Image 1 (cartoon, helix red, strand yellow):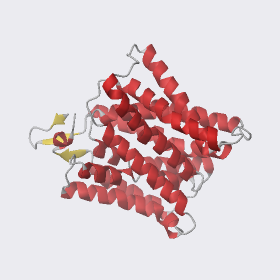
Image 2 (spheres, helix red, strand yellow):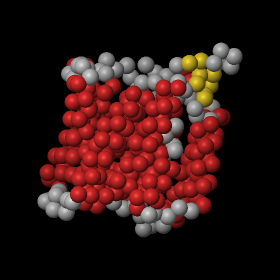
Image 3 (cartoon, one colour):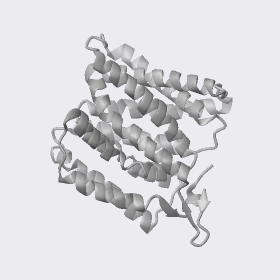
Image 4 (tube, helix red, strand yellow):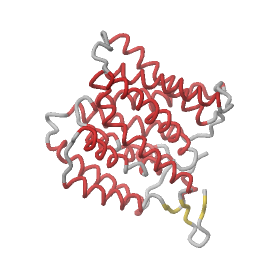
Length: 305
């Protein structure tokens, strides 16, 4: 972590900023594609298929790179628990919400996870509030509120979709905080095992609840699975775990606030979804939030290794 000598402030490393850009594009562009996936396949089937295929792909890549694939014995349990939050919970609830909401609004609600990340970090004593960080968080949440205004105005008609996305956000934030520990396992290997282990509960539930899941599966569904596996999971998830090695979980999650804008733009281009004044206001608020997030005082004090 680089510290500015004259001010004592810690800045986000350039490598972390590059990872943030790539992760934002990978995560944001996938939502309208996943919309096709959950239309053609039941949520459980789509999610276990993408999780397990991604896990196998990532572990294969790690093997080619020469990494040790075996988990250290003391990390097996926590890897599974992280997989339950990062994969099982996040994948299922976000997929469920996506069946009830459009892609743009789904992205917005799912990425309220910075609020949950800060609350969890505060509860376990890994974070402290400061006026600047409260202001940045407030701007970010204001952006989410602006973009969600139309959905919340019809909350009575869409409670389950909204609640599912908020549950997904809570799972993502919990997984990010659990992830902040001194791992012996290499991050690519860790990502592969979390995807694989987190996909197994989804597979078991699918075998129980999904009858004839591939009945309506077409080339669009194949494309949705392939894109989600390669871009959203194999690239996005691996880079996300790498990012968490470089910066604190609350900062990482807050810095992903541009993802909804990418999701909305992708929804407009791919699905023809509409854009209103809320999106412009949200973009301004997100810019302010990032300005208060990417350079923060005492960042090294927040980093728990």
